[in-house]
Image (cartoon, rainbow, N blue to C red; front, side, top):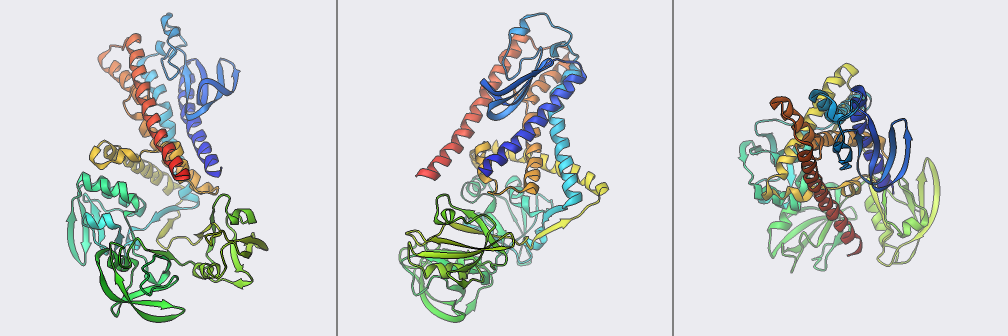
Length: 529
């Protein structure tokens, strides 16, 4: 419900302000506004009230909104008034330059909204950058597909198409947008050129997470292991192989991925003792340890961990555990970290009683629960520490404003590159386009105003870009015909404009049906199959 509330709030802010841009521009040029709607009122509206000449309302279908201007064929597809002679208060009676400004009013507001939010956040909480230099100080770790297309763990990305990037949040996408990726590989410069097919495989199988920081293996433990345990036990910490100690997690993962039926001596830490265990590594998973049989989990200090997720109808939910609770004790035994938490749960039989001592808003509470038949309680933890790679640059208002314009332009350019990637069929990027349903599922489970406003700024730029596309039915389509009229001096006939608008609406509704259908299908299959 929180995710639904967030997406409805975000859409409401964006739609109202976008349509307000059209409304204000129309009123400046004395064009009558017949309707102002948040969301679409196909068939009926949830709320409506006429104030003056304008009907204000909320539709039932949350896929946008509109203002209906007198003398214009728009989303309402109302062509009746177009049969009558043009009136002075009608959109069609105004000069082309005024009509163009009215059409671009929503886009202008979207851009200004993003600038305002960025300027405000940069001057208050600071400009947040995930430092590329910090995160790849020891090189980067790549997923299986990343390795397959030519990256090696330990590589450092120097530039993409000759441009050096400072913010890691966008680096993976810039790699997919670009043509040439310059790498530092053990002090040597290497250039990779990814094909559309290779980019498509990354997008489909690993997405933006195909590259990341190299994590220290000292912070990970084996949370689950398959039938072919080969002497490895749950909660072991893998620290090396064949008398050579690992530094990073990817070194162990590489061993699992690239060895078939090889017997090696794994170095493990078990109950604070280092042991050598002879094990068989089999990347196929049939006769030994493999990626599919081992689950590694990051250990988090309990001081830094809070409950970050609660499964619906789980034992945790029934016991009254809440998000952001801190688990202090299990059955009167203090726990120090996530590994300790898992170990204590493993000592309790399935369906066994469980007493939890939690800290909530600086108060201690005792909650009675139990494990389910699988020996689980149904919660996940969240690390509350701010990332060690995050840099906050606190700017003055004078510094924040030009930086906000720069960031808005960067995000606009990001949307252009994303669209270009979508138009390249071999990348399969078109399959990743999401409706509000898909976007809502990616939002956090708790209300975070900083995240929400940053998301609104990001989405606002995206909405501006989308509306600039020269597609009939969008602001960009109307603007294109108006610009053509200003250049040629010839206006598109009302009959032709009606046909063009109809085609545009068919295209837009078809695209929305596809994206909504895809996200609904994914939601249903994940929930029930």
